[in-house]
Image 1: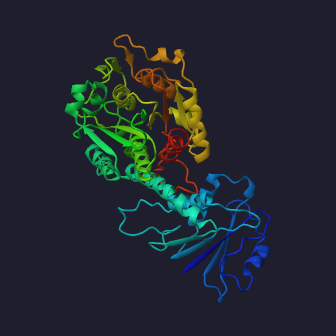
Image 2: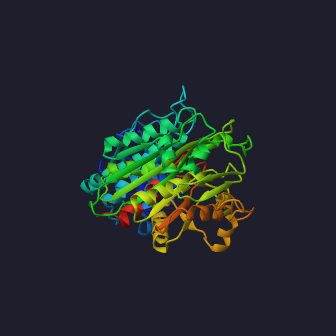
Image 3: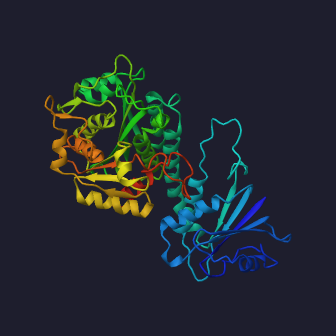
Length: 481
């Protein structure tokens, strides 16, 4: 079966196809009869006349082309993909009356198709019914555009970024019995084939470095911890790197401060930050970004066996600062504390951005539509906000202040790992800030955006891969060349 896709602006006629798909002028008539107005992402599915080379004609509303953003084109691609049905061949005609559509727009539409087409079904013995579930296993998509050469060039980068998002989604969606600390480290090691230098530090090596905070989280699990360091050297040798650090708790029971049973299965996704950093390095290396980039991920499992750390234990971090662990379910900040200090101490980067599914409190504040942003540097925060607006991976800045910081002072150690009842996301950020030295730094709390976020035109997966497109855009706009 074949599907032809036409675009229609709001209250306007659809664009023309490069081939005669509508000899009976059925499109104009169907639009008139159906009262189709061309509003953004509205669709009209038509059975093609017998003389047409296509079986179906899909008219997709585009709204006002004059106000279309890059993300609007990606959403359009996702919406089109969602209507493929059983089509094995799809031709999208990029034509709008009086509108010049460039190669970049075509590539973004292709990005939306790629991201919407993602499915995590490797453990299903039978395909799902429902949307796209009964469609063709593979679909050949052709995008017809006058800017074909520019579109092909732009698609090289788009394909690299989509590959990074797909990798992040796969890592998060994998069940914890399949993806443990060693398996995750092995996945990161595969980036070597793209030219990424990958080092994997063992628990013995971390113990020599004094990473008592990270190791304390891991000591209750049969799975050993790992610290993975990924380096992409695409910039000038003299340029300092930019650095991204990810929390990689492959499963979080809460430890001795064990979580309730309801929803605990979602804690296989508590490594969403590490997945995003790994996907980002994949994207940057695949498109050969002209930047020096470091990715550091701390991989642990938080389990409550007889060796697990207890509430009230005091651990010594790599920085030398001591931490009283009052709640073993506030473990991600302990992992990041040592990873951040290690990264700042070894690489002295231009900035550090860490990502973590860190607190439920950030979801109380922001829901599932923005990640929480905390930063000690206004320029970095503003650039992250701009990149989020451009990619629709949006962030919202929340405060850091001494009044919050003092809430983690401890009577028995330099600090404690939790504060009071309120401001939990802020208190977690204040904790992390004590381990970044004077490096420009931002913390992204992605608990509400990386997993279980609402379905969109470009994502129908439980795991969104949030952060890959955001941070790729940050690097592209400000730190390449």
